[in-house]
Structure formats: C-alpha cells, structure tokens
Image (cartoon, rainbow, N blue to C red):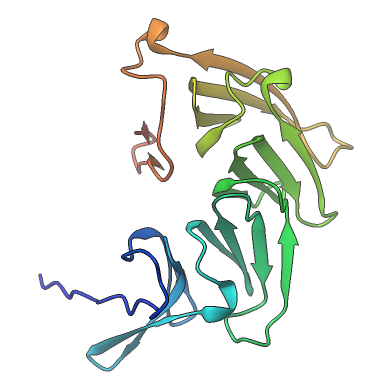
Length: 212
C-alpha cells in the first residue's frame, strides 16, 4: 500500500488555509470541497493535478453530489445549492434554496427524490417536477438544524442540533413527495450527546448507521 499527498493550491487571495470538507468522483477525477471553494483533482500518469474552480468562488463547500452530468454543490452560510452542468467557466449554473445553509445530500433513485439537510430542516426535492417540501419542527423534527441523513428501508435517520430523528416515509400513490412521521431520540434515550456535526454520518455495509 502506498500513499500520495496532494498539496492544495490555495488562491493567492485566500484568507484561510485550505481544509477538505467533501469529496466525490467526477468523470476521470474527483471534486474536492474545501473551506476556500471547490477544486478538481485529475490524475495524469503518475502525477495528480489539483486546480481551484474559480467560477464557484471561495465559499465553504459542505456537500457534493453528481447526478448524471449535473454537479450539486452545497455552500455554507446561506449559499444554497448550485446545480452546475460542468466545471468549465462557461457551463450553466442554477441556484436552489438560496437562503438555506445546506449540509448534505441523499439521493433516492427509486422515488426520484433527493434529500437535503439544511439549517431550516429536511428538504425533499422531486427531480422530475422540480418541486420541494420542507420538514421542520412543525412536522415533528426535534430541531430544524439538520446535519446528515441516511436511509434504512422505509426510514430516514437524521442528525440534528437536538438529537437524532427517525423519519418513517410514506409515499402516496399520486404524490411526488412523501409524508413523514418523526420520532426523536436524545440523551434521555441513551445517546451520548444531543449535538451532532456536519459530515459525520455514514451507513456501513452491514447496515449499521454511524453519526458523530
């Protein structure tokens, strides 16, 4: 086993040292979300090339998802989600949920829905109709600030600022977006803490869900 260190080429006007926040495969390389913007990593022979994608600015990238040819980019601090058709400067960009602080994506190909964790709650976005709905405290979440989400059968597990939430999903035969019944879990139920972190969630191959 060998390891290769790749130095992040920080822009000359960057105000912070680069930190990696998200990573996903894209075409022949990888997209890397950092606290100073989005980078593309490409391998040429035995060497890796990493370049800053200036057209996306220097906002912190908290989440990435590639849906066919479109790149979904979640920006922290009210940046919303940018859906880009590529990484070239002239490629089109569309902004969704511009006032939300989106943390993570979870695609559901069966129902053609993508789940988004945000500071306003859990968002369900139906890809074909481009409609969405927001689930917050009024719908049963223990807290509207959500960090991560994993799917377990007909249930979603969501980490929040006030414990974990289990959401039982029910799709009506004529509805694009589901109804959800939430159950909250806190330290009273055995959790070590009620506050979770962005990027700290995963469902293992055994089916066990991990949150941090």
